[in-house]
Image (tube, rainbow, N blue to C red; front, top):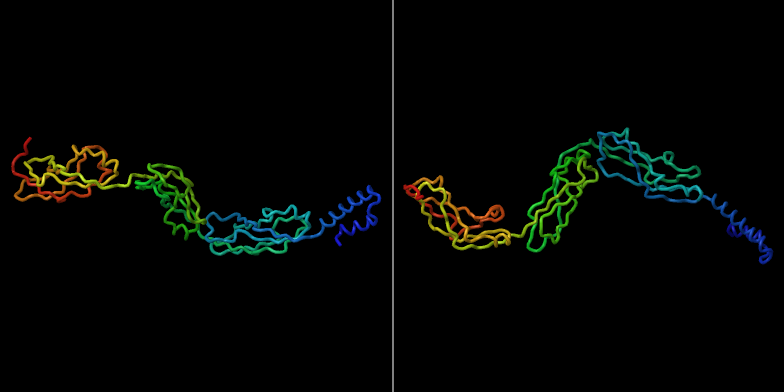
Length: 326
């Protein structure tokens, strides 16, 4: 029979009589039961309890993952345990005397902050191993990262960050092995225009810290996916000639590659192939020269590529020993 039942049996042998007295007695019995049970010890397990590292030497860095939490089993009254939390039990490890290499720290019950009346029965694990290495700083490139595909007909043609490099610090072995720091992933799905945005940096190794920038400006260049277009009978024109020059053939079929919207803007009336004869001297045989493309429009040179001319890439250029006609 429980403590409460025994008390009620004593104070209430004849149910139904003296209701007021019985109510008072029940209240007293309840108070006695609470007091008795508050003093009864119980077992409780706290976990995960975080381990706190303090006073790491400034010239050393943590070089290996370590056990960052422990489980602690305590015994005490419910009243005393009511004020115990995982945060209050956190073991604090002083690294001020640590050296490069493996350091073993015992987690002792006497060093934990527990109220009087609470006993620590078990700490699991009872020791923490911390491996330290020389601290190293280095300057590494930033690699912009994207995911997804742009809108149909478009592609990512370039990615960059400002700044392009960043400082990192950490254990020597990890920093020396680090080739780059990546940005957080930027989704380009469905986009059809270039854009910029601020993104976070990700070292990729929890032992390495970013010594400077945590965020950078990232630019993603998106253009139309290039296509190839054919232009027939593009004339060949000689420029800067000091002598009379004849070219054969005097027109070619041209294949150009670039964004479709720009290819459609090419004016076939101004499109031409060019031979620069400024350095060509008269001679008996012909020169074989590949002409350059001239769009007759600004900025197209950088965005549109001359793929090929046919029926031939090089044409015959004959320079006569006669002054050029003006």
